[in-house]
Length: 83
Image 1 (cartoon, rainbow, N blue to C red):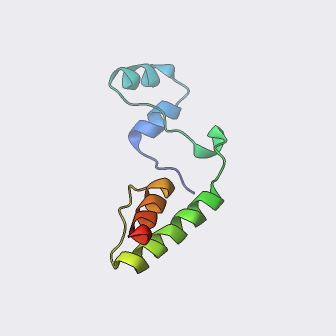
Image 2: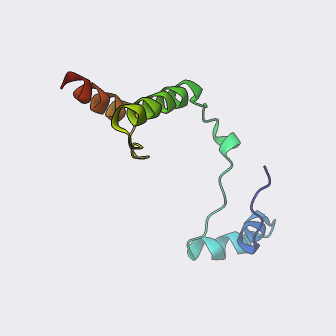
Image 3: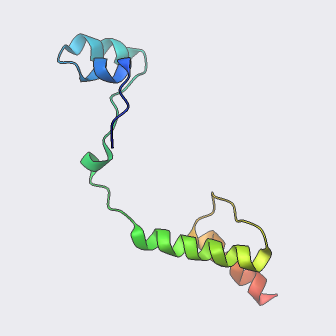
């Protein structure tokens, strides 16, 4: 994936630290590389969330909110099933 190359990212990546100091005072920060953070991918959680969203849509006839997590979707489906 190609990084977004703007003036700010090029200036922050420069070997001249003056750019980073000045831009840091203005509120700009260096872009964070996701691979450098060693964040594990959550493939099982995404699959479960997708399955619950499909189940919710089949049950209620409308799409669930994108902000709902697995627990919220599961509780809403359980409440509807209990009624």
